[in-house]
Amino acid sequence: MHHPTAEQWKFILPEVSRQDPTPLLLQSIYLILSIAAYIPILFPISFSIHVLGYDESHLSFDKNHLPPADPNISSLQQFTSNFFTLLRRTTGLSSTTLSICVALTMGFYAILLWLDITTDRRPFPWPKSWHTENNICYDEMFGEPSRKDRVIRRLGNTLSNFFYLFLSLVVLTSTVASSALGRGEAVGDSNFPILTGFVISDAIFGGMLFTLSLASTTWHGCNALWSHVVDLWSMEAVILYFPIRIVSSAIFSMLLKWNYDLSISSLISTTVCIAVYLTHIVINGKRFYSEHKMGFWREMCPVSVR
Image (cartoon, rainbow, N blue to C red):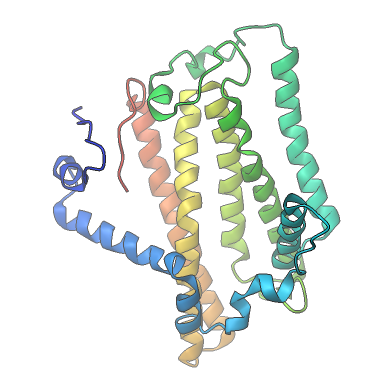
């Protein structure tokens, strides 16, 4: 496969488009839809006020819900306090539950580090079917030096998945708690209620985020080729969920403006969200599995532009 090395700062989209077998019309449609889907993320305040109909006070969380900066504590302590305040008030979870999520995540990575430090089996005997000796694709993608005889070959990229695992536990626990209270009810801080109509799609997202955390840990830890497939598949699902959810929220808001019943509006918008998200997960999963069976990443790292 021919994949030219682009000069620095050179715009390579025309060259990529020329080599892409997808018809030019479909390429253009994909590009336009991708840009449109990310407009809410690029302009969240304007989109939320003018499309979703949110009150402007909902968009100033820091000022309304977080305590003022305390000069007597460090910026790290202030950040940590604000971070957990944000999680408590937007998920409805207690400090105890969040602490358990932290403890489980720390325990998982502590075991990995303990195994890495204490084992005298070097190189570590990963299953031969994982083909961990094949570093071609990984070395083309990442520049972190590899400790090829250790359990964790790249400490930085592996341990950076801490937040993926932690936040996946938070999302999954929150969806379980929301479901227990009844879908469509408001949970959390009385001044900052959370609508739980999207509890099913949020749970699917939490599951994909959990999958990403484990697959990415495996990929960066020992570069097993199968984990790269799962890593890419779950990563794209995680990235795409927010545009889908935002657009579905916009549908919910517009249906209410058109005087549809609350339950009907919720049913339509959440069904759209679940259907589109699951369709993407299934179709993309089949594509990645097919490419893996063909040995797509075995000899190189193909450049993909999305």
